[in-house]
Image 1 (spheres, rainbow, N blue to C red):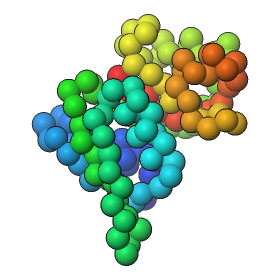
Image 2 (cartoon, one colour; image 1 turned 180 degrees about the horizontal axis):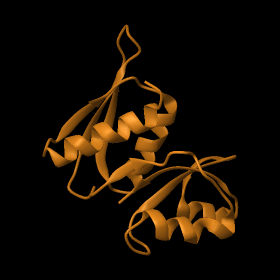
Image 3 (cartoon, rainbow, N blue to C red; image 1 turned 60 degrees about the horizontal axis):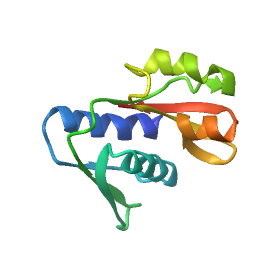
Image 4 (cartoon, rainbow, N blue to C red; image 1 turned 135 degrees about the vertical axis):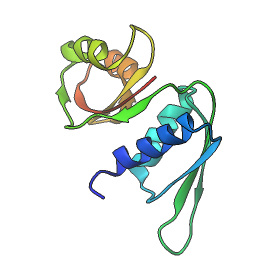
Length: 128
């Protein structure tokens, strides 16, 4: 597996379109947990639970009806503060609908938080 973020978001999205309420993401990483935390705060998933076992653990995600699409952005495009509008128009269906997840020097943030802090970073994923 080359991209754990793409794999995790693909598992969530395919479970959503097949009308499942829960899915299992493996392997587990702190980066994926932070992405799930942002999605949970945005209301796109209900909750997630970390289950540790002898093989590294896995994440059990409970979904809701608010998620329409989630996908990772490859390649990881660098974005400056004045370029965020361009990428919102490119990846999100409408202004103010959905969010971009951006990796900054202060951690993972949404596009709204990046604008408030005035910093740039690398695009990781989009969710709406």
